[in-house]
Image (cartoon, rainbow, N blue to C red; front, side, top):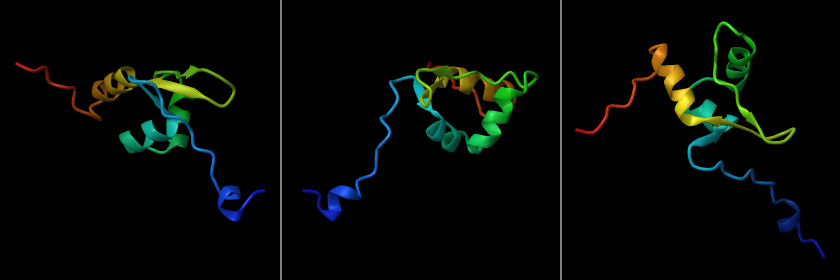
Amino acid sequence: MHTPETRKKKHRKPSAPAGYERMAAMAERIGFSPSTVYSWIADEKMAFPRPLKLTKNVALFLTAAVNAWLAERGLMQAPVAAL
């Protein structure tokens, strides 16, 4: 029998493997909305890194590729190598 508590459980999206990010997490991290990111993906001139499509509803972005894209445009500082 279901109790009100069990019915209210929300489906939790699994976390991405190391080195990859789901859209919501990546968009929040870089400070742009998902709709802005999708428009960058659609615009070939922007050359935003395309996600790896796993299923119809699951896509992962390579974190290093997104960071490099941001750094190339001056939107994020490139990581500094340890001395």
